[in-house]
Structure formats: structure tokens, C-alpha cells
Image 1 (tube, rainbow, N blue to C red):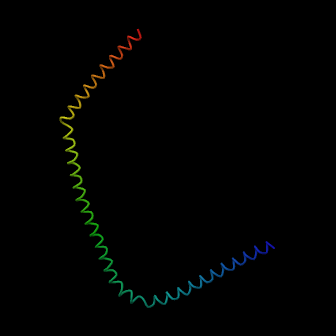
Image 2 (image 1 turned 60 degrees about the horizontal axis):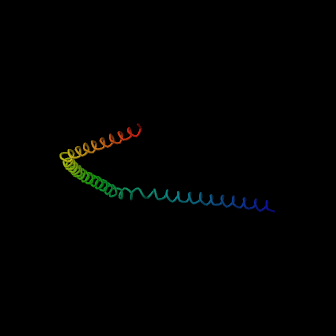
Length: 132
């Protein structure tokens, strides 16, 4: 009984798929015929419509290229302004820290270095005394 039910469902599904494909092919043939009929009458209308469309398309392309050029110019100007500002900032930063502060820092490092060296010498001397 189960086998009969399975065979019936497979056959039913197959018939439905074949019927669906038949309807699809039939609708494609009718739409192709309608398109063939339209093609016979449309060339005159398309020639009249194509010239304004071409002009609109050319105007759109020109407008896009002008906008792109304007954007590029604005970005170039902005890039130059930012580059100048960055160079000014780095020059100010280097000037502030390069002259007096570096000398003070070098002296501080030398003084700290000397004091650390003295402390390590004292510690090593104490360790030597402990080892004796």
C-alpha cells in the first residue's frame, strides 16, 4: 500500500512539472509573437525618441564629469591646506622642544645617570664587604 502511494505521488509530481513547463513554453511563444509584432511598428517611434534620450544621456555624462572635476579640485585644495597645517604644527612642535628643553633633558639624564651610577657603586661595595 505504501509503495502504491509513493508511486502515485511521484507520478503526480512529474505530471505537474511537465504541465508547468508546457504552460511556460506556451507563454514564451505567445510573448515572442507579441514582441515580433511590436518590433515591426517601433523603429519609427524609437528613432524619434532616441535623439532626446541621447542628448539627455550626454548632458548627464557631462554633468557627472564636471561634478567629478569640481570634487577633485576641492579635494586637492583641501589636501594642500592640510599638508601646510601639518607642516606648521610639526615645525612648531620641533622648535619648542629642540632648543632649551633638550639641553635641560640631557643635563637631567646625565645627573640621573651619575646618581644611579654612584648608588650602584655603593651597593656593589656593600655586597663586596658582605662577601668578605
